[in-house]
Image (tube, rainbow, N blue to C red; front, side):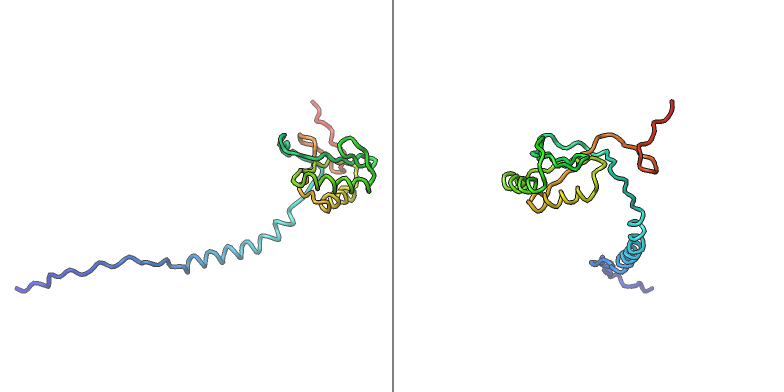
Length: 153
């Protein structure tokens, strides 16, 4: 009777490489999904200004208080300034406190163009940290933009 050989064969070696083909396929499918979904997400964005439930700013930060009244006057702290003086003062403040935060309070009736103009002056002066101040709590408005009436109890 003859027996077979009693030699040991080596076990198969583990693969030292990762098969990248399935990973690439999954990544390409995700890329196509994001390319299709991105325009749809952008059109769904609806902003309703000036509502805000923002967190209160940190009390320890250095800041410059700036306001625009309903009449369109500019206030730096409690000081009323004309546009030329406001630009000059912003430049001076930026030179003294370049890392200070500008806290902008604008009345709801102030046109957006005036607010944007003031932001431009601040950025040109070198104040790039700008915070918008709003009342805390949920402000509700109706479809016409007028304040909504409180529900009857």
